[in-house]
Amino acid sequence: MPRNRRPRDREEKSAEIVEAAAALFAEVGFEKASMAAVARGAGVTTTTIYWYFQDKEALLVAVLDHLLVGMLEGLQAQVADSWTDRLLWVVERLQEHSKLVTAVHALSATSATVATWHSAFHELTDALLAAEIRDAGVDAAQVPAMARLGVFTIEGLLMHPLPREEQRAVLELLSVVR
Amino acid sequence: MPRNRRPRDREEKSAEIVEAAAALFAEVGFEKASMAAVARGAGVTTTTIYWYFQDKEALLVAVLDHLLVGMLEGLQAQVADSWTDRLLWVVERLQEHSKLVTAVHALSATSATVATWHSAFHELTDALLAAEIRDAGVDAAQVPAMARLGVFTIEGLLMHPLPREEQRAVLELLSVVR
DNA sequence: ACCTGAACACCGTTCAAGT
DNA sequence: ACCTGAACACCGTTCAAGT
Image (cartoon, rainbow over the protein chains, first blue to last red):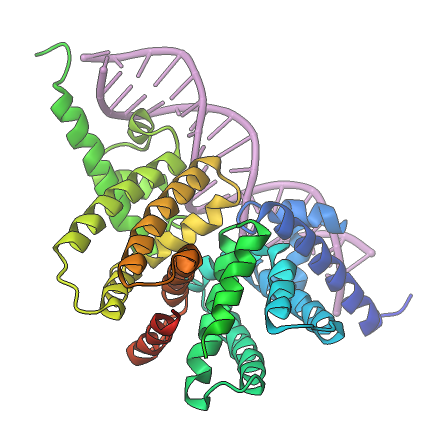
């Protein structure tokens, strides 16, 4: 019996907890997902989670990072046709985790941990979107505002379910802004 | 001692609870505001709240209606210069209650009560905004999508605090879409 | 180092009992 | 009709104790 487990084990265990949490958060939402239920899903005791994560918010941040990595990989593999189609793909991806998006916004107002992750996330997405917009030949002075408008629109579509063609109409209107 | 209190009394008491709740929800957010703390603020017992409101979500809806009435009155009295300035005024008003906006979005995913209020609210605001946009002479076919884009932008600005001039840049960019 | 069971303070809600 | 105190099931988190 080794005195220390291999670091590999530690990663595996914490990854299992993160995956159980991700599934439950997406299903019932962050607030309604109890630590006890997450523990059950991961096959551990409630208190064990606290060995790996400081508190429920730290677990949320771990889940968000996990999902972000997956989404960036997917985005890279994505063969995009038009600007509108790309945005639409991102919206669909995020829609599966819309409960986490609202949770992040709600918690950002009261939790420093989540607020920090939230602004780092938007620094990243703003930069990605700005690059895309610049490539489309938009006047440089308007690129930052344009990127913001893009992000706001994506989030708006997440939070207010619309028929697919109405989603498309909004995104196409947006692509007209030059 | 009258057998029944005047209806007046009932309204007053429930109004006191709503105002106490509105203040606390705006200060600490919906999730973090306990019914016990609301009761303390209104000078009643926790259980008394349940005489007037079915549960915490029904209380939230009452608070939202209360704030909506106040905002519509303020909007009417508002002497608007430009389209951009009007939106900016609404954003500032809503910013004071941004915690409630995020709470509504978060709860809409799991609570039928709140989801119903949320879509009724957007039916109203979409109509108001659409009328404004039509008056500005926008092509009729694009009015609905345009109104949505306006609402999304307002909510985006609420959820992602920006310096005032950057807010203005986004709104001015939006007003260019015709 | 890792994991547990028992305990703590708190939460939204209910209910029988009072006036 | 209106309001209460006590109780219920649950929550996130802590901590002393085990291996």
